[in-house]
Amino acid sequence: MPQSRLTISTNGPGLTEITDRAAAFVRETGVEEGLLTVFVRHTSCSLLIQENADPDVRRDLEEFFRRLVPPADDPSMRWIVHTTEGPDDMPAHIKAALTQTSLSIPVAGGRMLLGTWQGIYLFEHRSRPHRREIVLHLTQ
Picture 1 (cartoon, rainbow, N blue to C red):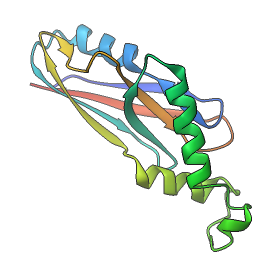
Picture 2 (cartoon, one colour):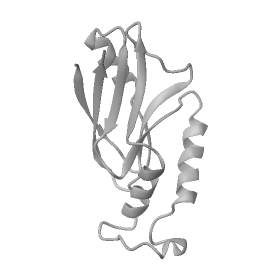
Picture 3 (tube, helix red, strand yellow):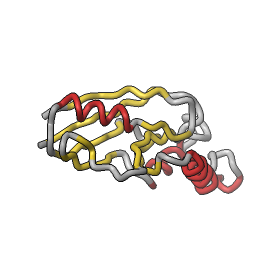
Picture 4 (cartoon, rainbow, N blue to C red):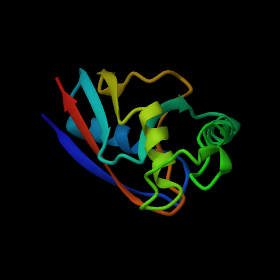
């Protein structure tokens, strides 16, 4: 079963599209039909399938999550205990818990069966740049 690892460098919070890299992996395997699993090996970022046509969607999602889960030094977050790694760490864990660390995408005809406007994104939740590892695994 084909498997690959991607390393994605982030610049801080936000969505980084990885659709092209996942599509290239699927093409290179030569597998015609199967299931692609995309898995991120971290607890403070996540994965999303989301619209990739209008950048306003990404901006609105990022703003929604900033409002939903502000940094730990925000007065509304005084209840947070885990602050050892900084005021962005526990909120990043919460955001990751609300989203997902793994995606399953059907493959047919050697291509991912994403919808017309769907893209795969790494969603970085920490405020500093990070290097994130994503595992791609294709089963037949």
